[in-house]
Image (cartoon, rainbow, N blue to C red; front, side):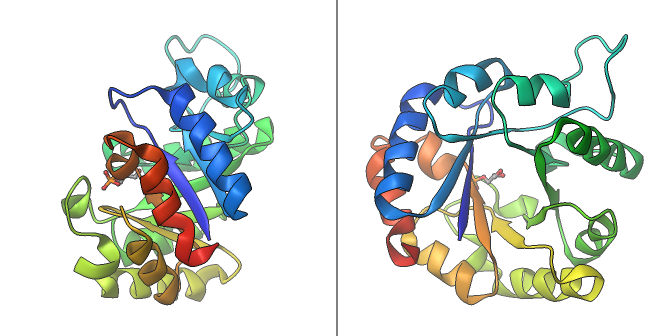
Length: 215
Ligand code: G3P
C-alpha cells in the first residue's frame, strides 16, 4: 500500500513531519510520501522522505508567472505530483497538460477524481495512479472506506475497465490503520490523507497506527 500524505496549506511543520514520516516508512517498510507546500519541497526532500508536489501547471518553461512548473518541483526533489485535487480542480485539457509536464520533468502522477465517471475519464490519459476522493468526506471524521465503500470498489472497477495497470488510491477521512486496511480490502492500492496527520498532536503515533496493518 502507498500512503500519500498531503499537507495542503495546514499550519504544520512540514520538515518535522517529513522526518517522522521517513522514519516510520523505513521502520515499517511501507511506502509513504509527503506533499508539502511548493515553497517547502526542497526542505522536505532534503530529509530523505519521498516528496511530492500538490500540483503542477500544464506549462513548460516560459512566461507563466506564478505557475508551479513541474521541472522546478523535480529540481527541488519531488518525485511525483498530485493533479486535479478537489481543492485544485482543473479542466480536462489542463489535467492532460499537467500529465505531459510531469512526464517531461520525469515525475510520476496521481490524478484525483470525485466519482467513477471522472475516474474513467482521467484513466484514459494514463496517469501513474488515480485517487478517488468524495469531496463531502474530505476533512471529516468518517473515512471513505467505511462511510462509502462502494465508491472505492466502483472506482477500482471503473479504472480497470480502461486500464487495469493503473493503481487506485482512495482518500477522505482516512486516519487509522483500520481505515487503511479497509481501503486495501476494497481493492485500493493506497490512500491519500491530510488532516489525520497534519492536524495531529502526535503525527508519529498516527502514522505508525496507519501503516501497522499493511506493514
Ligand atoms: O489529499 C487528501 C485529502 O483531500 C484528504 O483530506 O483531511 O480527509 O485526510 P483528509
